[in-house]
Length: 230
Length: 114
Figure 1 (tube, rainbow over the protein chains, first blue to last red):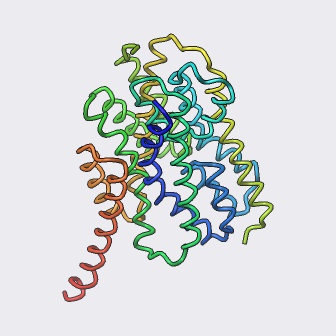
Figure 2: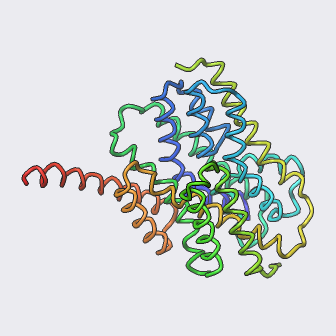
Figure 3: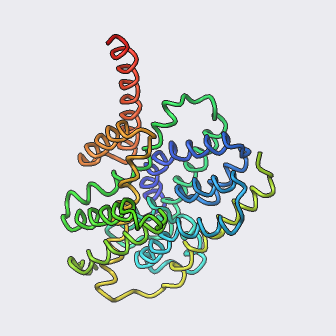
């Protein structure tokens, strides 16, 4: 499991990221952010929902504490992923290597690494991380530069790209395993309950994802414990 | 227009918060977790996270419910067939764009005649 294999697995993520980060760059510049800041935003944060929310706070001139709290809540799921990934690393990871790997924990990179059948190596993780981060940053750059030249039809259609990518990751395993499918359906059900039941409306979208994940994965683990591989 | 210094501090601050959350667990948990229940939980986390992120938000992702439904259906079919991330993402975008065009065309040309 070498660097090249990692790049190969990361490349489709990079292509999938492009339209999403393109939309981000487009939006940031239309909202009055300089191109340089939009690009730095993507390169340093590498989050989708977190960046979109953060950008809106900046444009509104919000307080720093508001940004910290919003980012914290929306991105809290990365802590779960980071914890999960810690169990997937091979013996070659010392602290600096872990610190570098941590930078690249996104929904997609984490999921692709998790679904590898063996433990992952440091070169693999580097390869898996570098192309998507590049795609994410470049997409923002092009979106920011092209900005107003893009037809509205295309810029609104691109909103679905990220979700399409999510589905491409989870549907095939769900097809093979009814346990995985059940966990996904539970997570969706819990999310919908929290979103649509009126008195639960106070739960923010970031917390919805965390609560639904903990409940669905927790119940899943209880009903269908996974036999230890290796 | 946003002040550059304010924007820069904001961006770096959010990057720092995000990085700390990503780094803490992976740096602290160096040992193997032996609990079967907890390992099963961690194995199901990716599916639960992505499921929760996708639905129902995908239906609001294009600004119009009808085009989002078309895009979702296309993404569902393509991913069910095991197509790659790129094919599914791009296919959904094209489906949404076509649905929007068709909808607008019908609205302008067909209903205008009635």
